[in-house]
Image (cartoon, rainbow over all chains, first blue to last red; front, top):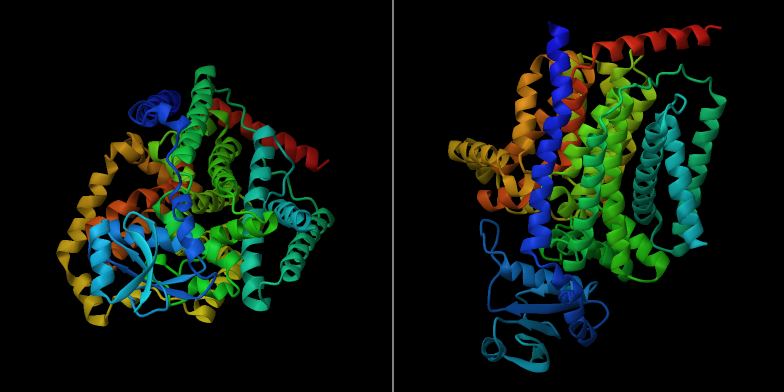
Length: 144
Length: 468
């Protein structure tokens, strides 16, 4: 009896595994090749690293620069990750330069804002002078 | 010279360690693939750990890197020589003859093809990898390779969100290939991500082929490949799938050692080494490093096995301590936790209940797991007696349970928003331990009586041959 139960389980397990596999694979195929359009793969979006390359060229090759933004990064406990994500994308792009968060008295300061208008407000409010604009809402400035 | 010395270190270092772990003669093609994959994973891990040790001890000069490669390669050659000289171990590899149905093999081939396609698709759509890839792992690699002083990568002057305290096996690999190739091409990061993903599948599948035969191997391989989140996590260039590869290797070696009545020391030692490499990959790896020997003690009362396992992990633990004490990188858990906060979180019953609720919801999280976790939970209930009776399945099963409990406690005690932290990391934790769970569950499935009898007869014949 024990052998028969064991054999039944043993023989049905591959079929069950195949069934679960088909469900999982169907989900993967649906998401990656139906919902996300395959046509987009021919023309993928540019890597953010490429978009931020002009910024790295404006900064020194090493050392520290300031970083200010109109969307404060939340300390632990917060849920909104957008400002953190934008800060860390810039940090990744400009490594090994160290970005000093909320530091506007460094010799050079990266200003990252949600809009051009907000960028100008940040520069004015913090007593900075524009050095160069990189993309919409992103610029390098220095203290007046 | 750089490329040659690097390849020699990975190949010879890995071959030496894998040769030590697998002492019997090669029994089948899948056994050969298991050994080759183990050599590859050991080689990559050891090469990166040796890089970190050489950086911490002697600095970043190119000649230090080449000398380190030479030392790893020579160490591998020495291990191979020692193994050849030593008395051949009794043949412990049983080739389990259990022919799987062709449709099962075809489904596995289909699953591998889909995983490869999703990997390519995801790598094209997100060439920088997932959030943590550029936030932590590849960012660290850039700092190490670009900075005049690699210590800047771990500086408290960086924002704590870069997680300077995370160990750096993966950044060490990426940084070395960046330096060797004199390029930061995404191909390097993508190739490493693919290698670890493929290795994880190969280790689970081939170790089950060795332990329980080809039918069990294909079931395990399907379970590994077809959870929907596996391909995307592999393509995300994060450290979770490399950690899964080391956990899989540790689980496979542990199962091989515990399945052998002689309980050989070498696979246990190398299982500890593999788990140690996991701890050098991610802080999460420390949890598995603690839970596996704890399970050995709890389930088997085997102090010797737990001690050998711990001994195997000692070099990597020493490296981890040297890094954490030598560079003192800030840790966000400690940075935002006072004793009062810690106690308040610990005694807050709502946090414990919330973690349990979130974990139960995760079982049916179709987007990431399909129906696999539900299936695994049902199988665990059905096989509960076999899970207790089989030494390998029992130890691996209890290791995973202990890891779940420890991770649950960490979720409760950590300072970030609980819901956000859980949803942003729970699936990745699951992928890390999924290989060990698959090996435990599939190893616990009873084998066909005829197959077991055939194996016993084979053992007797081999024993007679060895005795002349």
